[in-house]
Image (tube, rainbow, N blue to C red; front, side, top):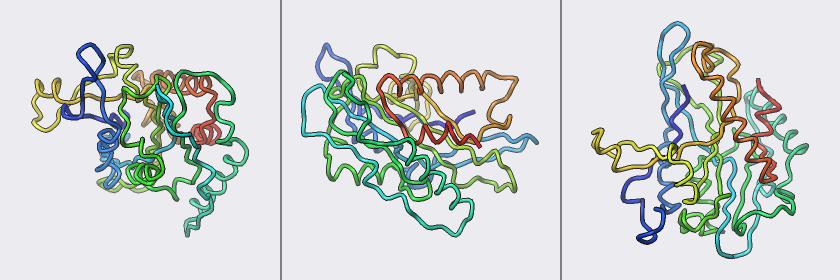
Length: 284
């Protein structure tokens, strides 16, 4: 049902810290998995109500990220409000969404108070929460490169360097579908996926570490060459139709479960995630 949002890391990107420790990957290798998706979109096959199938393409955007390190590094800084939210568009719907997005940001987001004084394992190295309208954003790969100019740890840190509360959220917005279909409102659905990016969760959630093909396409190679960081949480927007929640399957129950996990995670960390708030308050 949902697009394949797992970041698949090749065997070359997966390392051992030492003989007795968990494996780890470099963050630079993680971001590299989003390179083609950021440039061309990630394709997902969708079966319409009439039985026709289309390939819907989504572009990933960095929605939010918090990196907590096991050791103290440079002073942390929050990003979000530094980025302007004014933008211009010829499209009336885009303008309405932009104004709505700005209103949500004014009412419910303040990156300076994220987390309050709550204690949590690790030291906050970096956090970023996107507050720009979707139409004014740049793809995930470009955003990470931009942010890493001031925070090189975004590309130099390893997953084993990060505490268990390190996480990121990716926003997936549709850009086009093939073949083109007229007036298919359900194809405007968009998603937020939540991922932990610390090696600490490897032993606790083995079911999320599913393996897939690196290049050969052979089943045996799939289990040996790559590892996927599956989302533990999800928020969705514009999925009211049965196209995304087939009553004859467990789709709805699965979506509710993943949404609850994302909501619980944000509450436990005391995070006010702007995109999540928008999805909740603007379901249509």
